Image (cartoon, rainbow, N blue to C red; front, side, top):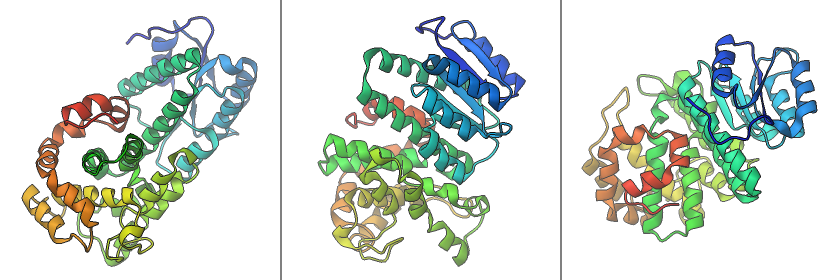
Length: 364
């Protein structure tokens, strides 16, 4: 794989990791175009950051770095090289690490080992190209958008590693939500918010034990009570991403019910944020039509009947009616699950135009 279009002889790539395979792969890909610096200890990495500063295009750090952990190293990188692309490597999903990645060092990626090197390299090349474009054009607005989208992708990918059911689920919920939102006449800005909310709606499941998420049978009442914590936990995880604004409330409220019997806050009727009401219908439909270990998914027709039955009780009637008015579009996405599931979070963020056109959805 070649790296193209970069300015040579100036920018540095720093790797703080003792993984020889990773070192060799990165040197083979980036070594010709960038000065490649390998740091085996914290002192060397901090020294390199203080010396090279904004000459550093990319820094990749293992979370388990000696003396100072990877979060702190990337925090130094944010200070000394604010325009650098920061990636954290870790051996396991950890809720507290993800929160630190968002709030402390604004990582571009949170990657759980073992690494899929092909996807990893493609992602890094895309990030470097975006970085070059933004720096050359001084496109501050675009840079902030890329940072937000990359953070969203990082935490969503971490969730997909933990909960296999979410692979494809968040993508489909996003698409269903956008179709509903367009039908309701939402503005382009609101559709963009809905886009992010759909991808993030289940992010709180990172904080739910894996044995519950992946249990092959029905949950006990206690286990279900634990699962019901995920909307509030999701809002807590992304609360400090101020750019998200209303999206945070939509994530927290996507399991509220129109009749007030939902969770976590028992909101009722139009007190439920409209974005959350849209997510609630989209999420419920996908849950009903998806196979789980303990049951077969419903047919499209059966799920449509259930949404119609629960209008005014579980679902906002305006949202449910909008959903029912486009059931053929919804059914097409449901029938096309295999190809839709191939769209990773990153693809949906970066290549939304192609997918939206395929599904007859205007670009958002």
